[in-house]
Image 1 (cartoon, rainbow, N blue to C red):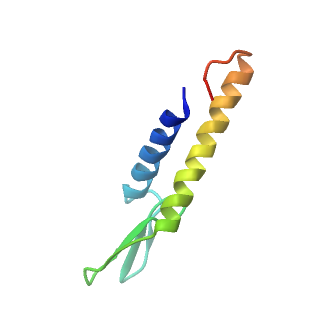
Image 2 (cartoon, helix red, strand yellow):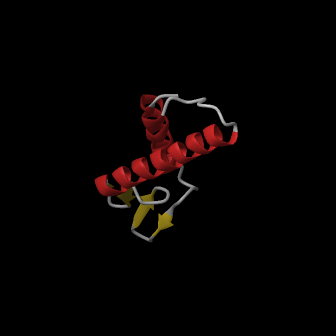
Image 3 (tube, rainbow, N blue to C red):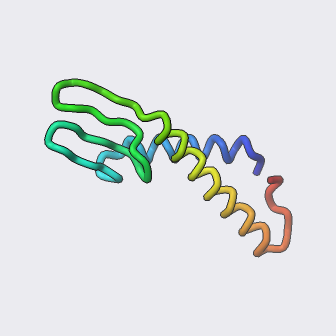
Length: 85
């Protein structure tokens, strides 16, 4: 598994975790924030929409490093270089 696949998986996981409303929702009466573990986007009842770039970048790299840790751990447990990372 090369790093491009890890980047793609991290991007997909970040988008999925930020778009599921029941997962990592912070509700306010006027403003709703979505994203896990960091908020990525939000909208208000008045129709305003916001996108937090820093939260998106943080989530992306957090999921990337978790996936990288999993890949390296699996490679170490099986004592083989199963993945080219």
